Image (cartoon, rainbow, N blue to C red; front, side, top):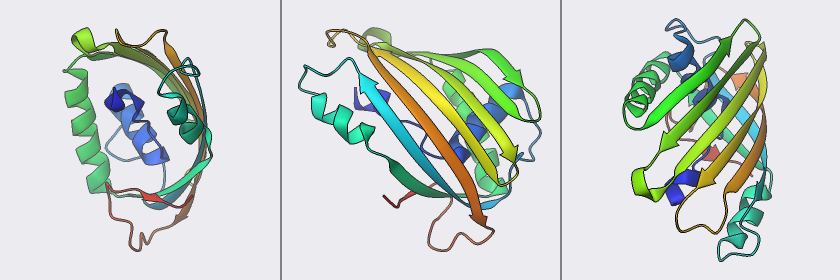
Length: 172
């Protein structure tokens, strides 16, 4: 179940998924370097369960930093393509210069499934925002869980400092 709650917490992660799905070029539509992302989430469907504490933890605002490099971009695209071959499908893909949206559905066999609707708005090469709505179902859950996440991401600069590509840094 823990795996179902892993959310993209950075622009880099969301943009990588978009690139793989929309078959964008190997050149990312955003600047390479250090990005900071603030996410806010609400979780419903687990209020009266032993997992209620998770809802309040996810509901707090989180600020993360991530380092986006051309090499990380390409390796994540390859990883995302592998994910599509293991129980996940993408539909309703839309991409233009300022917006990318898609739906993703993943089945985990008898362990349940999740589906997400993603909207990403690329305001510029240094600023993006978006929403992800995820619904999780599993046999051991009394009802589906819905997670609504919003994010705002901005570019901090080309130097990533102590943030290594592929490893996010929790700021708050």
